Length: 225
Image (tube, rainbow, N blue to C red; front, side):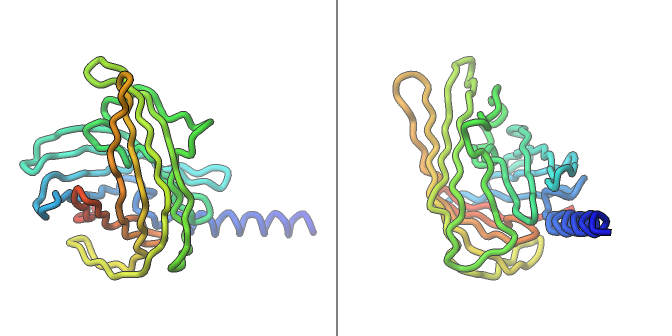
């Protein structure tokens, strides 16, 4: 009887965790999500389309495989890439490959070294204003026009600054506003090139990110199919 009770409790816990993850956009198979990218002048510069190609569950973790394609403002394909999203107990974990400028992702020839790097950014299912979120960092070996290079991304000082309502062509959401510090360092030869990635995200627990902003511009979710 005791063993049966423990089994039922474990099953209930697993089911609850699965339910916590089920509504995230990037964990819904065959879902297509379009993000419109604006430059710092507020003009449309590109669109990023995410297709959830596969979703699997095991060991309490739900994983989503994404194929992405970037189009310029005239609809011409610029770059294709792939990335991964995971969820465990309602905590969404997004591969930091998604922080890379999309024109570079198709040049990646080696995955992030997961054994040494925290390659996923975590977004808890329950947030409060004032929360500090976990940092993330990753290193990737890349090939740019036949020249090998190494790129490191560090995301730190992630803070929940407040709650705001965000309306886009795809809907209206009550979001948590998350700010962060970010730096991308690319080393191609002896001199490193640093890029500032500081930004702000508007995140909906149980759903996903609907808006981002940085000094370079912004992205907004504009279509869900």
